[in-house]
Image (cartoon, rainbow, N blue to C red):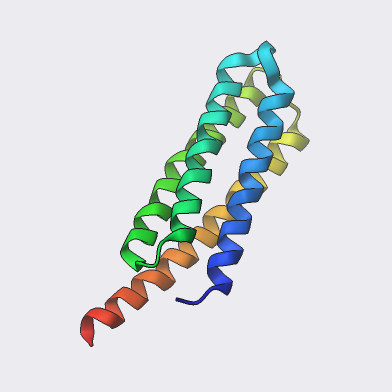
Length: 124
């Protein structure tokens, strides 16, 4: 497996996890529901990205990257609700969403690359 696209994708997901953790700490007990949802989403993304990085099987990596999407949605949803409640400003919202968008694009590119490789290997 090629390592550069995988490493880039993993790094972007780590950045998203860091943004979510910082936002959860910033919200703290004042907005406990969104803070918990952010931590839960960050945990899901972190575990799935680590599994995708550690596996040597392309199919398992695809499954793991797919699981990242669930945590990504959780982070986006909690961020939106924190903004709607007035707990964060637009700048923080935009930074978190930008990190999520970059991670999503990298994840989709990586999954496409892996799917092509799986198809190629199944033809041979």
